[in-house]
Image 1: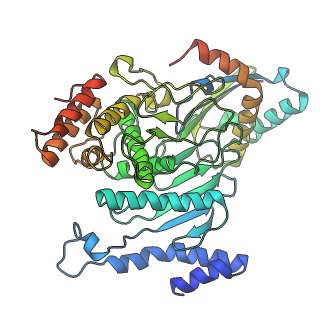
Image 2 (image 1 turned 30 degrees about the horizontal axis):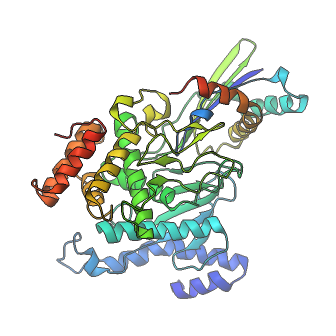
Image 3 (image 1 turned 180 degrees about the horizontal axis):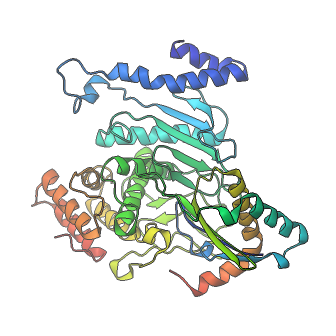
Length: 345
Length: 117
């Protein structure tokens, strides 16, 4: 087996066939190489000292080109350490999966989707004029958009963060993808997606735009993004797409069988609660509000069937264990939930 | 042949795209109608399982397609999550998607304004 630096050289300078072979080797070799790198010394616990053992992290990205088919996985287009390809979707997926990995590692000491160095596989150019992005349980998949209403789905860092975060939820609480638990699953992906962007831009809660998917719509669409965490229901109002259906308060909760019981609709309610908490606390949203929500997301008592009220209670409990009960943090979180009509006590 | 086509789910919910598109092949141009009939036959539509197969554990933002075909006394509804690997079903859904885009905009816009979730 060739060492990775040689493979990378071939991937950069070889013929197309050599390049493909080198890319595949780099992608598949990563697993074993990094297992060797992180084998803990005998007697050392596996958890809790990852940072000390492996300060650079174990970011292992592979971006596949699905070639405008729906047949996954597609051809390896860029593997960890490979240089830019000139294909915008490939390079955006590579860079933004990296930014999302770095965010989780640096802000919450999380090592990838499963907190155990799981490789990050992104698949671009999925389908023909495909207007969606999804997490299929093991990888992230992005369409090119139709060029009419939607640009390519790798264009927004927060969308890439959103999809990766679905993986995090799968490995943590496993929130059911239906009804209120499903809306919380969506909510956590929106929160993490927005925080990844704020973190990379170095924006405070005041400065952030609090949207998910800005830049995804073409100029023909009357809208700024897929969703707004600060003002749910205002992200778009378009003759073709319709009006942003998200409620911002329990009074407007939408009961529906569509969209898995409104998972992308009612997520507006906890989204706004997070925004209210983050802006009340001030500063960088990922530092205090984000830490509280992340602690809740990884709380083992967050069960798959958790609804809004129990989730709110768990955030309050997370505040108490992180910051105590007497400070401004608990007040901010309680008032945030109260502001959307949910009692967190 | 009458067909009904609807796509749900995905990364966001767009009320304007929620209404099903209904197509009567007698109202289509001849070649469009022939293409749809061919796709239905090649997908062996009336023998397909109704579905949908459960998506993988933990999956999110997947789109779900619902296709109904009525022909004479026969009617069948098939539901399938993406990705759709069967090329014949894929071709039918792509053809319906293209027609939906072409035919459906005005109707959908009208529906969406009257009937929000």
